[in-house]
Structure formats: structure tokens, C-alpha cells
Length: 329
Image (tube, rainbow, N blue to C red; front, top):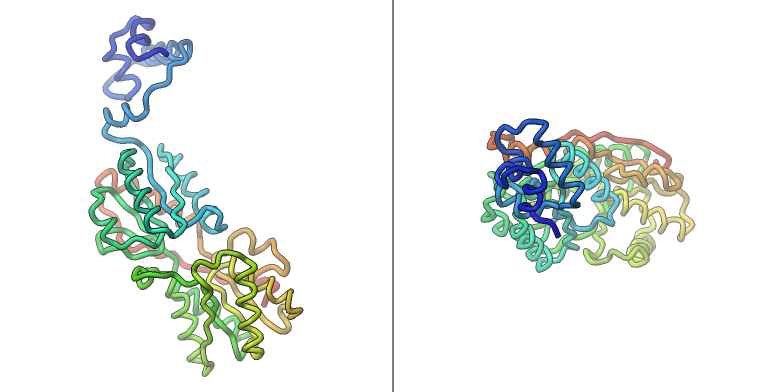
């Protein structure tokens, strides 16, 4: 297998010159660059990326820790993050934590060993202290870690209010908020919890008692969630509206209603949160609160790059939400 010395010999250049070309360091003529790249291609030489990273003291890699890529919201978020990272000359190392503490800790160690330039933290299981001592630029998504770590979020409080107002305006007298529980002391730092706060404030101001169904945090199986919802609806037959904390949960509510032969929207109205692609594809099409996922992704990458470059950045970056009304209301 050819090495750097072989490339330099075949190109008739010094090892130092070839190294400078590979690491884009100092002035090198275009003619010399073209010669080095031509010889590399002829010899099928693949530079050692880790060695180059050590030389440059920069890997151009960003670690991304999320709960699961299988969730439609995180799938779309990752897609946009990768796009904007690539546009800035960075690659993503994707880590699925599956909300598992030990797995998330293993991923952090892996990212450190791979000398990533920064970490985007979209998971929610580790204690804050695990991130405060990394000595790496970090951007948090939808979770407050500390006043020194920037966070990108949507206006969850207003989103909850918008959803509640829509249900109330449509005549719902017994709406319920459905969420998936998050275990552990970190739950209080999750900004998505403000969706419930906004919802409850709005229904209480209308003189309505707020109801809540919290699904099992580990209950990722759709059949298990549907069974829990059906049991709750049977226990509370008066329920005529649902605000689900995500579009995925809202889709599961629609499935449960179909199984119960409960008509949407005449018997029960449903509002989700996120406006991922499935919201407009399922039947009936879902009314939801839209998060600007693309704009938020762009902001996350910009904050990462600005930190790497040593620039000052805003610590709290909150994006407005929009109510999208479709067939479920």
C-alpha cells in the first residue's frame, strides 16, 4: 500500500511539500497541487484522516447525539444538520443513545477519541456534569445544560397555547394532553416540557380542567401505546380533544381512534407538534404546531462553527412556531 513517501517520490517533490498540499497549509501553486492529486489518484493513495486531523489539530467532524434516528423528527433534524454541516466543510458522526445512560457515555468517549471538533447534544439522559468537562464546543437542542452552553429550541410554551386555543375554539370541553414520559432528574431541563405548561395555562384560563396521559417512557411499541390510549379513552369517555406532544404520538392517537371507531374530527379532535412529513401524509391529515426544523438546523451548525472559530454567540436561540390546521380539527 503506497504511503506519503511514495507519493512524494513519484511526484518528484519533498514529503513536506506533499504534506502541505494534503493539509492545505501555506502557499502551494495550483500546478503543484494538481500534480500531487494526479499522482495520488494514479497510485490509489488514501490519506490517513486521523493523522491529518492530528496535524491540523482539527478533524472537521461534529458528533451528533440523538435518542434515535428512527423517530421522524430526529430523522429530519439529522438530514438538515448533515446538509448544513457539509456546506461548512464538516462531517457528522451519528450516535443513537436510545435514551441509555451507559450507551451515551460510551459515545462521548468515542467522540473524544475521534477528536471531534464539537458535539451537538440532542439526547436527554446524561446528567449535565458529563458535558461540562468536555472542553469542546457544544450546542444543545431543546435542553438547558448550563448558562455557558448555547441552546436551540422552538417556542414550546407558545406552541402548547396555540394547540389548546385551537381545540377550545373548535368546541372541545374535555381535551387531554398526551406525552411520553422521560425518566430521571434531567427531565426538568427539557424545554419541550413547556408544551404542557402552555397547554394547561390556556385550558385553565378557559375554565377547563386539564387532563394528562403520560405514556411509558420505554413504551416505544405502537401496539402498547395504542392499548394505553384506548384504556384511557374508555376510562374518560368525555374526552373530545387531544394535544399530543409530537406528531408520532398524534399518529398513534389516530390509530387508537380508528380501532375504537371514534370519528375524527366530529367525535374527537387531534393536534400534534413538529409538523414532520408524516403529519401531511397520514389520514386524516394532522393539524399540528410546526417547528421550523430546517432553520433550527442551520442555526445549530452556525453556532457550532462560530464556537470553533472563537466567536461570541447568543446562548438562547428560540424559534417561533406556527399552527397548521388540517383535517383532524
